[in-house]
Amino acid sequence: MTGFWSSRERPVSTVPAWIRWLLAVALATQVSLQFAQRARAPSAADLPRAPSAQALRLASLGEPAALARLAMIWLQAFDSSGDNAIPYRQLDYARLVPWLRAILSTDPRSEYPLFAASRIYAENSDPAKVRLILDFIHDEFAADPNRRWPALAHAALLAKHRLKDLPLARRYAAAIQQLATDGSIPPWARQMEVFILEDMNELEAAKVMLGGLLAAGRIRDPEERRFLQGRLEELERRLKSR
Amino acid sequence: MPMKVSRRFPSVTVAHYTLVEALRSGLPWLAAACMLGVLGLAGFLSQVAITEASALQVSAAGALLRACAVFLIATHVVASVSREANDKGLELALALPISRSAYYLGKLLGFAFVGALLTTLFALPLLLWAKPADLAAWWISLAAETAVIAAAALFFASAMAQTVAAIAAVTGLYLLGRSISAIQAIAGGPLAGDSLPSHAARWIVDALALLLPRLDAVTRGDWLLYGAPPAGELSQLLFGLGLYLALLAAAGLFDFNRRNL
Image 1 (cartoon, rainbow over the protein chains, first blue to last red):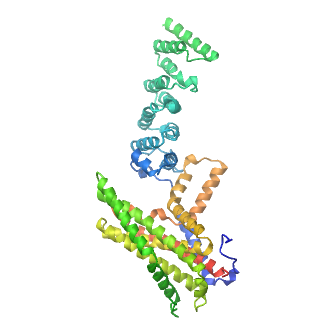
Image 2 (cartoon, rainbow over the protein chains, first blue to last red; image 1 turned 60 degrees about the vertical axis):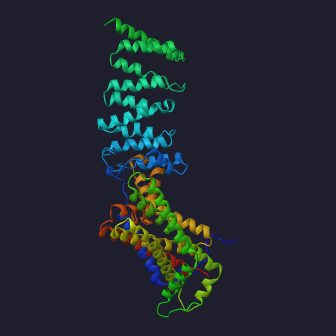
Image 3 (cartoon, chains in turn purple, yellow; image 1 turned 180 degrees about the vertical axis):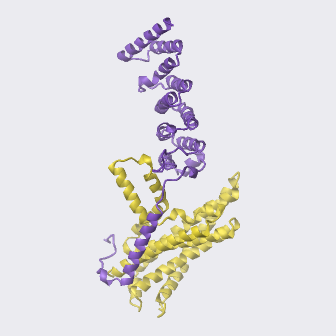
């Protein structure tokens, strides 16, 4: 059987001295040169325009799941340089969102694009950029609510606490309440709208909604039912005392 | 054909016979078939494009021809070295008054010249769409790139007894050379984490990058579209390739001189 390496070797002393020197010098120069030219994370300006989802699917050569995830890894490197005070701050979100949309269309079951959108890109200090990302999450949520609700729930929290935009937060919470029907979705996500309405001082609407939730029979846990019943009674008290 | 060795330039003699071997093999036909296939595909794509038809044609043709040149030179070198080893041609050649180093350098020179011929053949049709100055930069860069790949293929084919292993090693080196910058950039991002495995992975990637050529920065298709890089930048890129060629040649010479035949 043929071995992996070709044959046994002769002593190093059989190699002419100039070859040994050439090898050492070339290796040292190569390492020094590459060390000096060490690649850095691409800057925000390097982010190209997004391709269409069809083009990405074509480029995946029948492996859209792998390509979608690799594309996300690639995408998150832009403007992520370790010495950035705030990563992703400079990124052009008008370019970023089409990238996320195209990647999500390539593999609609992947949670990566929406997770990155809600947990990374939505953490930007620029409210206009945050709104772009939150709108993207909301737009994409409707296509698969039972899988994509965590991103929209986080978007609702960001709209409420970061943007202080309660109507926007309510819109997102209402979308979850109406469209996410899977039994595994935790109650806090489905009831988010009620609490936002309370924060908006829309007590009447909150009462109607909470009453509707309880009447619909979707709340099966007795402890949860008792808690919500208590909230409903408190709402009624607050309404009476107005 | 009996080999006549020049006393003054034995490496040139070996290079000459290496070139003759390549010209008499199926390589010219394969190169012509690649060129026709790529041009046909690029022409088809330009017909269905609704805009930037010629830009699509030149960028697609440039990228595909570059891949073809690299693939053809790598497989030709590995196949040639393997055939020579199987036919005992190496022992016969080294029985002539020629040193091992001169023989190895002659083979490398011959293969680099074959790469340059392939590059010239592939660059000629691109003259239809690209500016001559931009194409010249692309051509020089591809010639240097094929020389590096020929050196890598010669090194791996000489050091490894198995053809498949040698081709896999060259392919791995090439793909890593084309992607290491992106891998390095991704590994250095703030989301990579601070755990020990993350640090270890980053360190390994950085160490690996020191030993690889920057193939992603050379022979770029966008040179044909938007213009070649400035002369200073191009010289720096070519110097990087030349340095890596010297490194591979030195490693190959070192290994070849130590080998027991």
